[in-house]
Image 1 (cartoon, rainbow, N blue to C red):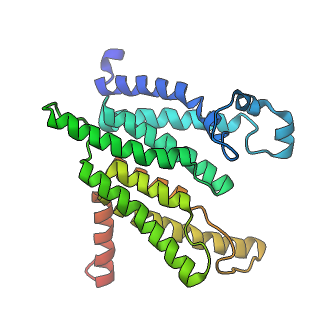
Image 2: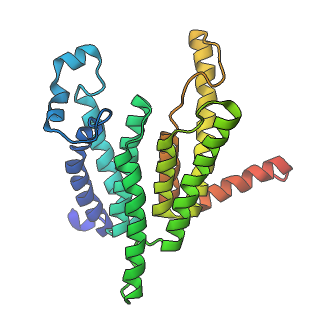
Image 3: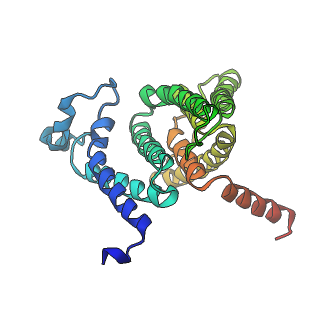
Length: 271
């Protein structure tokens, strides 16, 4: 029976088991925010906290932990199937679970942990510099490689673009338009994947944010009769950035170019 299973699937199954084991700690990591960014053993008791369950505390209950484990398991297997048993597969799993943590925390509390975003900037730059040195010494190029030049440009462009948008919103609207966490997060994406990935991430995240933002306004209007007031509430943009970045990382820019080409053809009436 095992002989009939493709060789790559064996590695995917092994990766899934490892992902399931590591996924047990994702709930622990998520419960470290907000307040402080330290992993105390007290958080291991949150799933069984009856008082928290009665209060509807975000940290209480085991259902979310099971979902985190499932997510980690599936991502680990998919990463190995997509990239083989390689450094890129391991990095993609780290990206995916980090983005999941950021998404959950940002939706719940409208913050993006600095430990992930800022450290992501420095580790991305150091990784690209290390890969550059590795190749210069004559060793084979690693399975995941971004030149230090692209990494540095991506870091500056990613952070600078959202910072500029936030600055313009503050000047023109007299209101904070972009959180600092989003700026640092996009800078980290740029440091790890380069400026082209940043551009693709911005396009997809902006589309997702606008689509779901408008859908949310319409839903609240129909379901609760809530009148829309411009700039009346903050929308977490981190989850859209995370989804967009993972899409670019796993599938590349070609699907985005194809969609934009189809859209342009639709506008011009050629399709």
